[in-house]
Image (tube, rainbow, N blue to C red; front, top):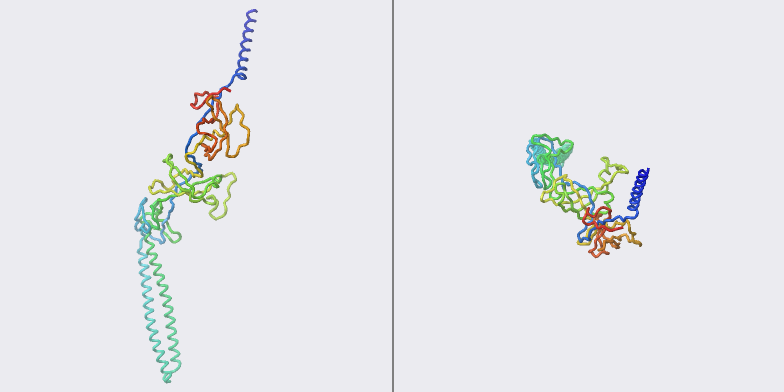
Length: 402
């Protein structure tokens, strides 16, 4: 019995010590706090609006055929550089040559008829004059004079009709010549052949719509059509500088300029011109057009671009991590007093490990770094956050007992 009672006492003491140790650890032991810190950095800072976009040719023309016929010769291939007025393709011109010859013959025929009619008019005038002289001598009847006058009037009217026919024949000849010229497809701009839609020997029909022969694009200057959210569209204006990256070279920044923004989303207008409806929970984007120099031919049509439109920026100014402007210590009260919209408290770590607040005046921010206009000398160690983890987890974590 004595041994059993002794064991019970020992177990009770052990349990009491365990509970007491737990209470001590929870309520009387000070938990260390470690601070993640950073320094004030002097650097360039810019505020940008991010948008996705596609590269497009600044000018692209679908060069079509205005006459029907067989493609006799295709003078260019995909990727060829062409100049304005250069011959791109030829349509079989034999039917058009025949049409021109036929129109020329019709014109000559009417012109010859006019010459003959003019000769008849000269003769009719002579005859009328003779009849008028004879009637004075009472050597002919008045009916002969009247007949001569009527004959002259008829011939003069026929001459006017021939003049009208000549005008029509000239128009027909011009149209036939124009159709003949249309058999030669020329480039309307300087550029690069980006698509060949037909092949030699293929027949094209231009009776209803002009079939496309080739596509020519000006690639010296390209556009980026960037999709800008409705939250950002009011922050940008034409003329703003920008830069962009492409998938193949994500670390290279290429300059661009914002030329314009479209007044409505692309799907705002339906095919029939009616206003399109948009779901209330659907994101709205507006197209921004940026110009890009491409004389080196680095960029291609339909490349994906990550666009950064610069809305504000400073150079060589003191900055801090934006995390510092949001930090609030868990064991210290925040200073009293009202702050202006461009003011904030940042906490500075002292040499003894304590931290203290400093009121600073802030400038622009890109949500990662924020410009400091006033309130810091530049030598401070700025607190970003706190943790109870071991300081060995990071070189900038400094312990301080609560």
